[in-house]
Image (cartoon, rainbow, N blue to C red):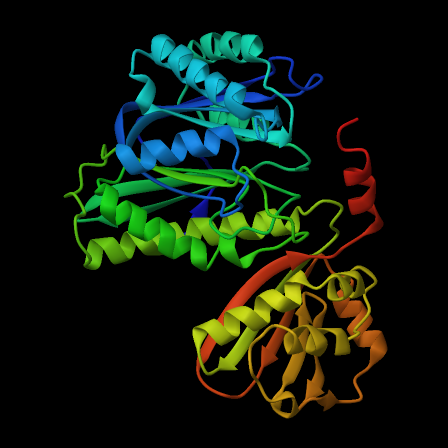
Length: 406
């Protein structure tokens, strides 16, 4: 089971398209995803009290129906903090897609990302829906176009796919995500769409998704800001022909393994593409007495602005890491902590039992100058561990966000 090239069109029966409808200047800004047959649906959404209209629309479909067949996405405007007009525009968008695709409106999901507080240009959206419906394709390029159309400040598309077997049947799972800023999820991610030809019930798909995001999208942070639009959707159309997964067992475990592989891969890509970031910063806490303790410590370190700026400066200022652990809310013995930095340039033990090892600053700087850096923290209390992903904090982050609307 390995990550391969591909995305949302990799699984059987899924088609996509992405175009520019004029929401953004000369950039793709609208996409459509469609399955030839109705899909089992699972979803998880932002826990921010302020939720965008499309989040509320999708959440209702997940809870009331558990099935869907299409999704319409736009970037540039978030349709958040837009009142009842924003809700009405969701209804109009879904009805336009339903008419164009020959499905019911409650089978159409919606997703938006971009500036908060602006009404979406509904005329452009509806025109785009009609155009997109005639362009749908199962080609890899169509998946790429859709992944590009949902980007905002992202610098690269984020796609992944994996093949595996369920009951002797070849199954494919693909996905795409976007997110570079306002990344501090407590559910899934900024926007994530996962497609599979596996046959799985709504209940088991929802259980698998909620489980996998805990170790992937919920373990990343770019800037500590949680979006109003966080949406993660899983569509399963069953065309692989495997026996329907309706309970836990070998096939369910295999499906979860594939889903975890995809979501962790996409989560890492999001953290690496953080706004203005030059480096992916991975933190693994080992030797914890519980999973909860390890998660708290790892996330506290990647969320620390002082740690993030030290990584940006290639500075082995390890005291900031210990400090961030100290205010995490998790108990640990600072006099047992070992800290190691790793990258392609090598490895250096920075602290042993909570004190400096007298490490080489030159070697540490070399290791921290790579574009992927790992800090391994061993607290020597037990056998549990957790890994979180973040990025460095640079001057470019301020530049990007200071003039985002202009």
